[in-house]
Every structure is written in C-alpha cells, then in structure tokens.
Image (tube, rainbow, N blue to C red):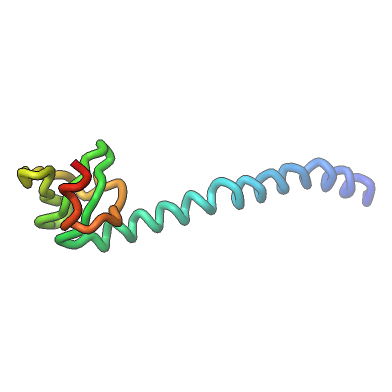
Length: 101
C-alpha cells in the first residue's frame, strides 16, 4: 500500500508545483497590478495630468461619478471620457503641458 501512495505522490507533485509556480509568476503579480490601477482610478482628482488608453494627454477639469471631463491641448478643448479609460497619471505638471505640444 505505501508503494501506491508514493507512486501517486510522484505523479501529483509536479502538477502541484506547476500550479504554485503559475500562481507566483502570473496570478499574484496581475492581482497586484489590478489593485494598483483600481487605487489610481479611485484617487483621481481635478488638476491631475492623465493619459487615456487612446493615447490622449489631458488635465482633469471635472469628475462626476464615472465620467471625467479633461482639457486637451493648448486650446483647452474639453473632452468627456469614462473613468476606466484613464491609463496613467503623468508626472508633468499642468504648467508645462504646452511644452509637450
């Protein structure tokens, strides 16, 4: 009987190791990244410089629930976007946004 248990363990152990490796290399980092993005989206405020998922740079001028109004370009053209469409916060202060154009 102990020989059968050892044989089963030898067959199952590689599968368990593969699951553990996938968890630490794929699942855990993705959850951490998702949490950081969710936190960033929740902490957006008026005046923040952002980049949208479409590659548009702008400054947040108003936030209402899941809708964000941004000013884009030198003319400060207003655009309305969904909160989930924000890719990242930019480090460039709003005073220097005309230098990018």
